[in-house]
Amino acid sequence: MRIVLLGAPGAGKGTQAKKLIDKFAIPQISTGDILRKAVADGTSLGKEAKSYMDKGELVPDKVVIGLIQERLKQDDTKKGYILDGFPRNTAQAETLDKMLNDLVMPLDSALSIDVPKDDLMKRLTGRRTCKKCQQMYNVYFSPSKKDGVCDKCGGELFQRDDDKEETIKKRLDVYEAQTAPLIDYYKKKGMLKSISGTGSIDDIFRKVCAALGLK
Ligand code: AP5
Ligand code: MG
Image (cartoon, rainbow, N blue to C red):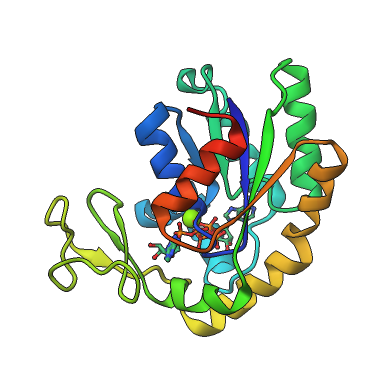
């Protein structure tokens, strides 16, 4: 299964991808996570990426396409993968198509998770993530039992640098202008599946599995 998860910032791509990994053991490839790790490690790539991420802008195509090319060469992708946050514009989508056609490994579907814009700000300003195990919480919708501490592993919870109101507004604008057109891109290819991303995380997961034909 090779799928692309589409959806605005805060739509729940990461949340649903993690549930797919737990149930089906397929790797999640999140360009956002890869870039955040490079930032945390202080690499030159991370330093370059941070300046774009902090402004809510896309990191240049050349950088993220290079990362994806490297990641897709790893062995664990042979049984499939979930692309989360890539592609992010038409140029990235066309490059991905070409790359996968060359490997004779085309995508199976693109799944769009649709959430009204008004809900996204609260989801993003309320998001907290565990430094150790990456478990996600939300101070409004799914808080940890003890403030700032992960229920699963006791790790410290942090707030992403780009989850500030001004940066979120910019990310949502960038999504509308550059990423939302991919919904039509995949529709025209007959690969698009769409679900509503409003409701409980478990209900949405059932819809994700049904849309992708997974049991
Ligand atoms: P990236 O990390 O991809 O962020 P994003 O697209 O902005 O999406 P998010 O991770 O914020 O949201 P999500 O949909 O994963 O939601 P989540 O599940 O966490 O990108 C970050 C930056 O990196 C970009 O701005 C760019 O600079 C750069 N970048 C990355 N990829 C790139 C690319 N390909 N090209 C160029 N630049 C790139 O959920 C959010 C919150 O909501 C959580 O608190 C969660 O608990 C909660 N939640 C989830 N589901 C529900 C629900 N059903 N009900 C209530 N709350 C819910
Ligand atoms: Mg995410």
